[in-house]
Figure 1 (cartoon, helix red, strand yellow):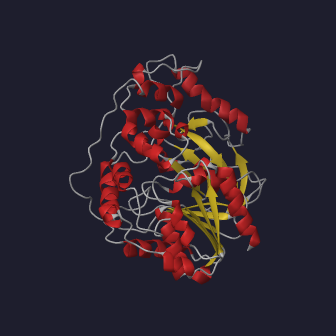
Figure 2 (cartoon, rainbow, N blue to C red; figure 1 turned 60 degrees about the horizontal axis):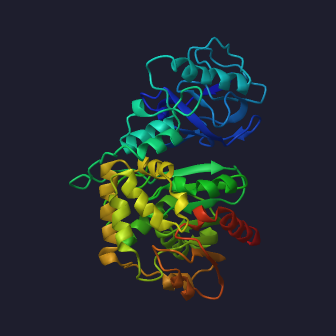
Figure 3 (tube, helix red, strand yellow; figure 1 turned 90 degrees about the horizontal axis):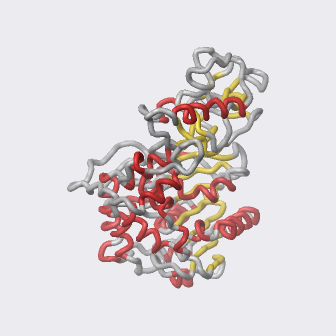
Length: 434
């Protein structure tokens, strides 16, 4: 008998529906316990659903980009591809009369869509999880938002338009720092079961989801591990006292994975940490890619570090997000609302502010990794935008001759966002060359 896979508790206690962002597996794929099956988007975050046991994906009940009830059976894991029977207490759609035999994906997707269409005639507000999250972050009353879709379902674009005319509320930053939380740093795994592993470290005031454009492509051929730094994403909040302490946290998380021959990729502060990891675990790395890495000079935009960590409203966060990019159109209201939703917690912002003040005291990078850059043993590439307003791209000129430099015109501090195809091409070529 197959095991039915649902979102379970990760969907949230009061969630009625969620959206399937992407399937990481297909029917007939063999999976191991802990492998990521799919990514869903709830009102609070994007969440990976993992396999509770090993087996074969014998059925998939809903398609990517579809909205499904929170209790719906998403797929089955059986002994083989023909094992499609499962406990009838769980139905592909909550309250449906579907039998234990799997229904075609389109049938379930259609049934999942019936709930919002039917409820459009009731007093209940029908909105996508992303729209509800953005509205909450921006302080927009959904009752005042006009839906653009014929079904009456409010989407993210509707909230983005409304938020420009409705004042956003501010969530105050905690007066004191939150107590240190125990537990290891969160590492999100996705992608292929075989192949050389990829380990990714995001930058300050970001999280592991920022790698999504690259992760989605790299995961086709590699197992990908995306780290959430302390005080970021779903990792514990801790009072980081120094860069050395942060390096130890990252190294411990990397060592716990037990991977060898990893292609390590880091951005900004994450680039500095990736460089420190390569310096202390040289035999564990196959290659190193650094996007606008920190630690190669004293200059840093201190106002940016302070401002982005403290931003308590989507519009104030948007102002600092625009500092990161050269193409200002990338930071539209929808982008800013989504980014703020991941950092609406005042305790998280307080912890990040303290971390920024510690690591970049007096608006300076106090940690120097130039010597580590010269000690590198693995093939390395540095990718940097010439329009960077956070760090100085000229710092990369200190690199030794065996490190490849890629300076991108009309690109800011996040080349992986502004030039994802070119960035992916550089990384893929590096991986193939090893």
